[in-house]
Length: 225
Ligand code: 6PG
Image (cartoon, rainbow, N blue to C red):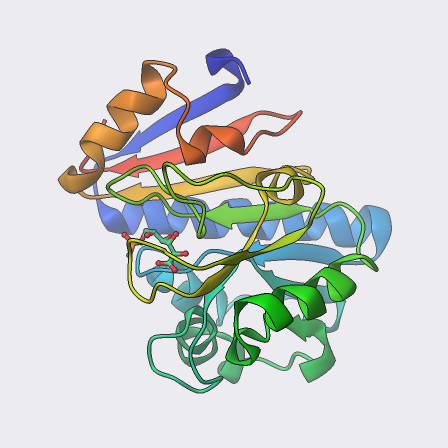
């Protein structure tokens, strides 16, 4: 992906980044629901998106037309506090009127191999996403795609065994599947991400740069430039 297809946007505060991210989600949801009757969104894990999810729980929308997926998941019990799905449920999904069948959590409690197999079956029934949300790790990982790892881009969901960010066992969408979206938005906050951003801007091949989008990738930054 050439660098000019990355749209960098810096914010003066975390709150203004969160607000802009919420507004972008709302705009894409309204457009997708209007044109195709549904909005397929992939959620990011980690901590950065939490405030955006909290803001989203108060918006006015037809939640029945939202289909929620997860870009990656940690292989922990389904209700474990450290699960990416737990964060999304507690901040947002437990507080809205969305049909449970519209929330497609990754069955990572089955373990990386079986869980990835099941999620591949789920995703085989799903077309392109409308929006993929992603975070960025200090080592330039995204989702559970880590530096030094290789990925089978013929698969939608991948088993991860030796993630350097605990827990080691995870499931991740592949770069190819994360790239099958009308929009991709990274949320990046914190000076500890600066080296990863520098690598990205230098055109280095990092996990984050393997996710592309025909409409360009948006990167919202706070406290990093
Ligand atoms: C995870 C996430 C991971 C995360 C980045 C950034 O399971 O941790 O999928 O990719 O998005 O590590 O995490 P923070 O937002 O907490 O900095």
